Length: 369
Image (cartoon, rainbow, N blue to C red; front, side, top):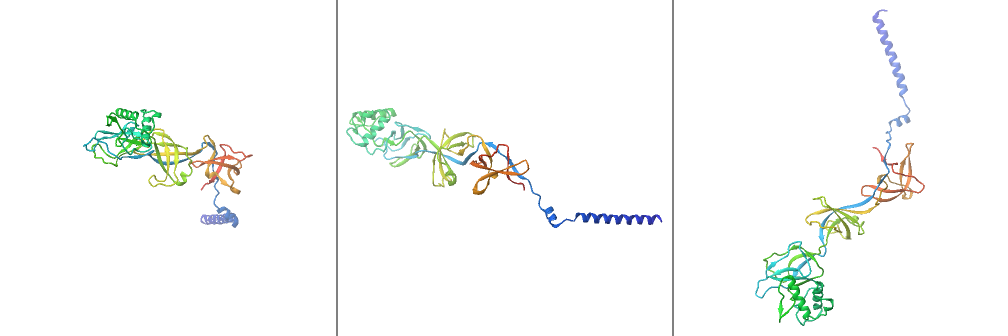
């Protein structure tokens, strides 16, 4: 046999052997339909798990608050003081944020004072020697409040003792007392009674040199106590009962002030952006900005067993449970009681009696994608 024929036989033999082997392999790879379906099914991913932790759980609400003041009021002079023939111009006003006390000067018109006193109602007439009535008693009680009369001097009669007390009031304020028939009297235009003192000037509505007329507003005042007004949604406000602690953060400085919930409204107010919640202040805050307010609704106070909410499942009768993983790569349900659910998505859990669940155990929260 020639060399060329030997090569042809060898090639033919290789081709036959290759075909036989390919056929054998093809036959060996044929599978039943149900086996093919199993082979083509998506691979199941292992469950996603997290560790059971011990942590403090707290529910908090976050809002923005503006500084407000209690007992805000507008001061209006019902009568105007001044010397005969004088022009009723304002000659002095206290500055913004001034704190005014009983016996202090509220304003000055034509160099005559408007003296501030505490009383349940304003005076309606000039009071002088011999006058009687409940308005005299109210003036006398105001004079008791500044230490110029004794309680037993309150007798609804404007006598010499009351006249002397009025003179002392003017002297302490730095002005001569008005006199009639050689006795000091109390002119309605120069004594302004408010229900509670001290007050703080919040805004001036007039300036020195302005003409003033009866009924003209001159300033707004409030009690010294300040608070924050926070607007929350109706759902959030319904979680509050009053007395909760609030953390107030000044974004401009990073300073933190502690407050407490004083009052929770029930009706949404567009001006505050929700249901108004009043927060007390432990300190003084500038009123030219708003503040971040975090309110602690409830807290465990100390570390407790906790898992993400996504690790909680509901069984029959809506009984909650978690799925703890086992050494055999399986899982078992552990009934739990759910306590506080925190704002961070973690829930306080307590394993049911006769079950065991500790920090470090792994529980199922879902399946990997």
